[in-house]
Length: 322
Image (cartoon, rainbow, N blue to C red; front, side, top):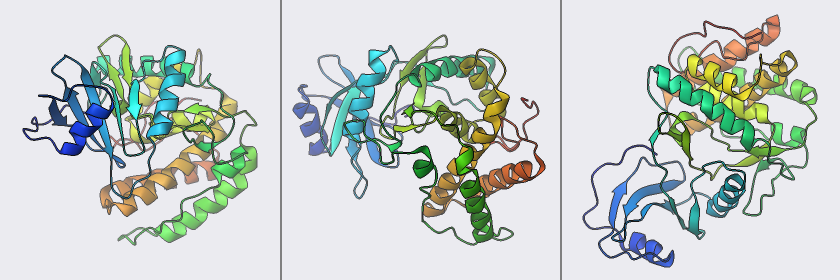
């Protein structure tokens, strides 16, 4: 969620009803749209009594994930992670505290952004101490969809990808499916840990010194921590990934984790590619296809790197971790 736009002079009655149901006085409450997500329409809310909140309303046709967010918020806050506090929720909406500070999404990243990314790595390591019982997206009781890491890893999306000039996407998807099926047994046998599911700079707030908020908890899942690191690296510039890894690990990136990290990166890149296809976003489709191709080539040649060779800032990674 980013900085809000103009205040809504006449809020929809549904927003007022949600705020009232949560136990707040909706009289003269000021609603301001925030950047919309895939599943929710979020609004910053300032109440007459001084509460600073966020109200989210489920998009038509999307799945209800607010019970999951409430469960995850409580678990994170128990161990001191500054997650947004879900104060009230139903299947259709939720009300949570609004995190202070600004999201980490400067481009290009400045020194303070790299510092914030390192702090985010420390917070993420703490998050990954929370054990869950199963893999995959979690329900409102913290129960996932898969009993094994292989079942989660190979639950590939089925949406088709469009044809693009100069790109053989069907051929690329066939190649990656074979690679993932062959690599599933190489994944580390570890119990599932709580993952944010969409750990990216835009979902982390900082005051310039500390991480002050972790938001958008609707996508939490059980999985291997390396998958979370892989997801960040696909979305953020290379220096931000270097900083996150520096904060997450006490020393160098573990060499034995390189192969599973790259396999997770390929798995996530396929999901992102199919999502971009559903949005008809050809620019992002080309980026994901290039990232997938680079990782597949590196696997073929045995040159694996913790930071992707191709990153969203349009540059290849200059510094390679062993």
